[in-house]
Length: 290
Length: 314
Image (cartoon, rainbow over all chains, first blue to last red):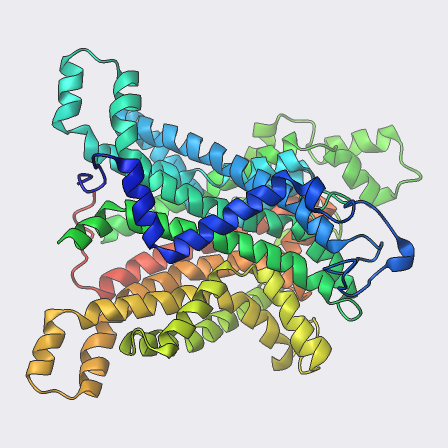
């Protein structure tokens, strides 16, 4: 089943395939650019993100302030640049945590089966049967504002998808001969899980995680838009939109630019994720090979 | 089939229990003393004494261990008593019930908006694959998927209310009030349904029975309306059902933007007010609706597609 993915030199193969998918290349390009912006934010931003300048409040975009200024005279462009840091930080951290938790849960459930499987999968069912954003909202709201609480809230509602997919993949690989022979040679469960099963189930996880970062960025922005995320004056895209709401008539640029940043980020991860799925999804590959 | 529904009903109870248990324990882990907050709401900040707080703690049963409190809450809830809002003092169930029609109205309107856009566009894109219309609609769908609904809402207000003055900025009332919120909420779903209608239609058009119908010399119109559409709609209807749950989720944000007096806004307001009874009530209502919708979707599968049978449960 996974035969199509495994090639002599999988990495070169992956890159060539990726190269042929235009949307994925664009997505990857934007992501690299965002990462660059996040890392070198202090050098790229024309102003300090906290620097207030009351005489220059609510200015429309012009060369000195490419995206205009907010009600406190802060440079929107610089704040968006610094906002990239927090958005990517939340997106990557939360996705890393949820993917790890989900993979471990899925591996355990699929490999050991029986009661363990039953317990884990029922927990997954319960959490999947509930609107994640509402739960994240309740958790973030009750724990109070702050970066850690937002990440915790999003992590609690995000790991189930990975667990379900990994479990399914484990069930498909578990009965294969190479697992049998590893067992016969006296390999420990841990060895089999990490060396034999994990590499065979990791492809869908990579796809999900790529799409997942986009989703987390969006959800985090939604929370901070509602006022539940990282608190001002920290530059966060969602919160910037929220505070711009009051000045929609006089300064629409406060509403336009931070939203654009959110959308481009989400779009980039979707592009790359979809591209990776086309390449890594064995079912699609088989169809292509036919 | 009946066995499956029974199984799902049990799962539904477990889901509701699990979710309420989770919010309940988070509330108690959360910073802030609920007894003190009720006391502040009741007597105001100034004349608050420690005795008042302790008295309220006793009266509300807040001195008992968490699991005792949860059991008590559960037994009350099971009898339809959701408690009273800490802030307004009104019964929680009444508050939610009062707000619920607005949320339902918004969700249904959004669903209609999205279907009116998505289904025709999806079908046309499939019939004219790789045409300009196809590319435009697929690009639109992609943007629709990635567009944060809170941003879209603000942009729509900016365009239609601030610049063009066609619709009110926010509020609840007649048809003019619902247009922008419904558009905001429906766009994401429209994008997903458009993509799905297109791909499902393309898939069906490749099937042998379509070729057979063509070979029989049926008109293209008849082939599409009689043979293709019916089959293409099975996955679409499933997704519509599943998306309805997400629409409800979206109401939380959209209602907040447009000051729409529904359950979503009630939840956000109650979170900011730390009105525990009301939060718990709203979360419970969302959980119940979500699970019921999912169940209905699963049941409708069986009627739509005779190939699916639930006897052979995995």
